[in-house]
Amino acid sequence: ETGVTQTPRHLVMGMTNKKSLKCEQHLGHNAMYWYKQSAKKPLELMFVYNFKEQTENNSVPSRFSPECPNSSHLFLHLHTLQPEDSALYLCASSQADGYQPQHFGDGTRLSIL
Amino acid sequence: GNSVTQMEGPVTLSEEAFLTINCTYTATGYPSLFWYVQYPGEGLQLLLKATKADDKGSNKGFEATYRKETTSFHLEKGSVQVSDSAVYFCALRPRRGSGGSNYKLTFGKGTLLTVNP
Image 1 (cartoon, each protein chain N blue to C red):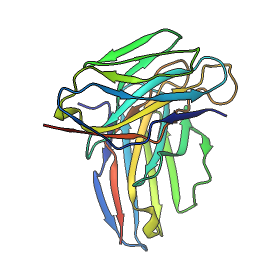
Image 2: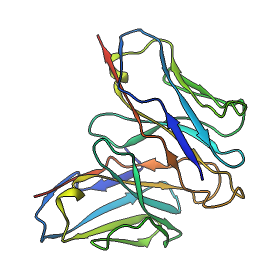
Image 3: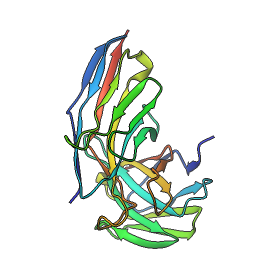
Image 4: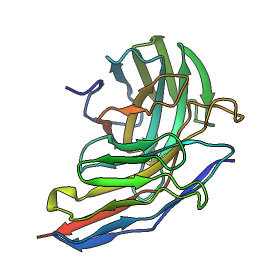
């Protein structure tokens, strides 16, 4: 059982749809992250939440809206996406302090029609 | 700022060949260093880590040694298997107090490894 669970695993949506990605971690971590992984591009950090507070937004377009209701759950709300937003979206968690690594979920493969 | 440079792929090897994937880094102080592996259709999995100079991380036959003098963390395996085919990412996490966010990982671009039978 993975400590970080992402749902759905696959999502196909039109540009005018609204959908949400969900991430849940069972590791007792207090920091959570959203990454975007596109083909032939480096892993891009999108958002960081530290003790439920957003501490980083790497110039992500407003059509991506994160939400972190508690330290175990993280959402990414999507609306009016563009074809270039098609990618694998990865969630990760870690302890916010110290030397411990991030633990990743298996990602949501998003395709925009 | 912090950065990680790893060798460009793809790397193609025959089964039982020796593997080296080079990784060098730039960071303030003494970061923690990691290798992650991503199998097809999956997220990233931590493969091994090292938190201080001269530490050797090891897992599943893979090894990497934290070399402060050369700012390197090269990944090695003596005999690769077909099941090792994946993308490998080198990453660093700054040490607390070294400036900036200590919880952010900086990743290399990834190296695709294909092992043929």
